[in-house]
Image (cartoon, rainbow, N blue to C red; front, side, top):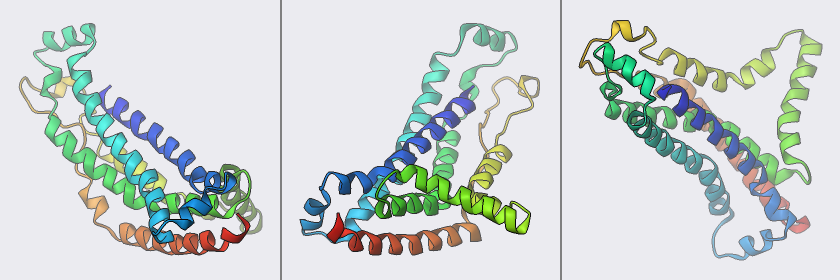
Length: 232
């Protein structure tokens, strides 16, 4: 219950981040506020960086804080029947190692930030480049390319590689989803960890490649932002 609740909060905030990023520049251009932002004594890179930071660091930060709040709140308001069942077995929800969860949950969010950054910049680029329906364009374009690839080549390699970071994040969460054996393997007073360590995933070549790809897409986003100014 504790792990599922924290994970659900994380997924919900990622979905909200997607909607924010695809509208971040599109809405700005549609209501003409681009002229105001471009008139400020700050470079375009700072404007776009602030939008990217709000869409990734901001939403992931909220996800982390709500996950921590959920863990402490759920332990206090643990369902009575489940609490009685645990007490009958000599166990307690307070055996959860909260500090270990906070550390592991923080590293997991940093991992998400690094591995999902290319997708965030991509949707910001779509928001900058498109004139209508940025969400449809952002999601539909890769799907169309994937269908075309399958038609021409005969496999799903394109979409599989394109979404590899998403699936690998899910795999990492599943592999570090500890304590699945059940209460029969937990002793009285034993400290229980909800997740394992995500540091090994973070310190990898995939992290470096993801950041480099995000940097290239951000450069293209900045170029497109400046190019679209005269016709905004």
